Image 1 (spheres, rainbow, N blue to C red):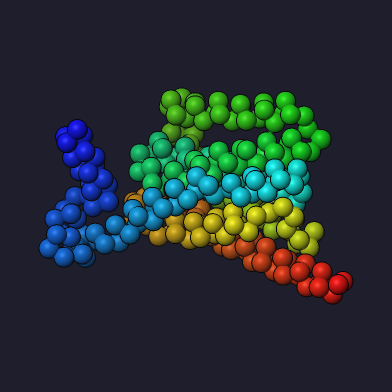
Image 2 (image 1 turned 180 degrees about the vertical axis):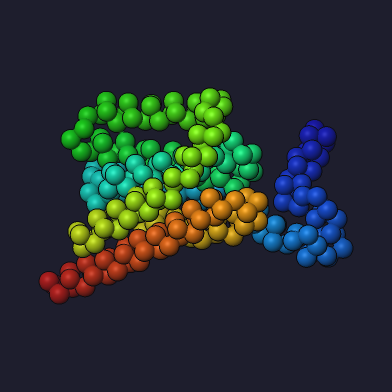
Length: 246
């Protein structure tokens, strides 16, 4: 039991303070080999990954409670699913640490559920929603068992920039056209925005300067910031209109 606990502690410390960083921290040499920024990056990575497991839960619950997916663009969600999946698959095959891409996997699975909700509450049948979810999980398994060539994943990752722009751009336009954000959850949107901003920092530290990943998170941060601003703006506008009616 002691050996097991000792092994866990060692693995824990090696993750947060790899290489010579642990010894450097013992003598308060926090700036050796960027150890401090690496520690912050690892803590942020774990925090984002844990938080992302519940990232879209408020959105899922809000849609379920309303029995409606009004205001949530199916096209935008599909594009979002592709981008999350691309990051997960690419990072997995490139052997990046799980803390760097785990949130993309969790976000992909939750986005899959949101798409299933949209299909279920629209004109599509429950069978169609179930079939979509089953098909997506099958695709994930093909990546997990390395059936997809890394060259194809490189291309897949490269096209995520226009996909992110389209997915977020469509949602931004939908909000603008409807003069409201429908069933979009403020909590989920704000967590997305904060998470992407933090990911810019962690990518600089962990992804070995991978410009594909870095540019994706920079673009996502900007667009998520716009959606966050829309949710705040339109929620205030609706409240003011309700006050005028009263």
